[in-house]
Amino acid sequence: MTEPKPITEIWKPELVRLPKLTFARKLFRWFGHNCIVKLTANLCLNINVEGMENFPKTGPLLIVINHIGDADAVAVVSQLPNPPDALGKIELYDLPILGKLMDWYGMIWLHRGTADIRAIKSALDGLAENRIIIIAPEGRYSLTGALEEGSGGAAFLAYKSGAPVLPITVTGTENENVYGNLKRFKRAKVNIKVGKMLHLANQFSTRQEAVREGTSQIMAALANLLPEKYRGEYS
Image (cartoon, rainbow, N blue to C red):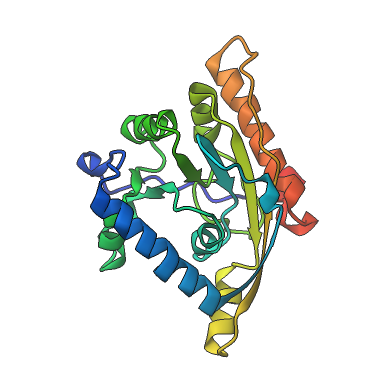
């Protein structure tokens, strides 16, 4: 039996907003992306990437990824040409040092397990500004290592904004693989696949039906990029 998806116990709606791209934040993002994220990825991971030709030159864009370990975001973001905006669980805000760094970067903080209207509006505002937003539609890292049921947030954002969806999958970032290799002073082998963009057309009579079908399309696109053992609910 699948464990229920987590519901945020921390409630800090005042922190949820679309970060303003001030000069200081742009500079911090550039430094973080090029000098921290890429360096960390190169030191800790041996990454192979396929399909970068599918990555568009401009936004708006909604990137959806599978989630199997702590290193997923670092692995994927390290391969992107520019630092994206990202939705992240509010629990990370309270982490020593890392939480503050993520806030300075400008996370769109999200209260999981609730209809977080502020987070949704912030992401929609970002897409309206032609930004690139990254989200993990499963809502947590998989407890089985394979795809779990997707939540409807990504499909809702795509339908509401009209932004294309770009599926990107990562394998090899399971915690036991990454941390196990680091203990032996080795880099974990990680594979990233960038799929073709999806355009979700709203041809349904109700929003619920559109989001349900859109979620199925998004998760199927992720599954098609993954080896069979990672497809889980979408085998």
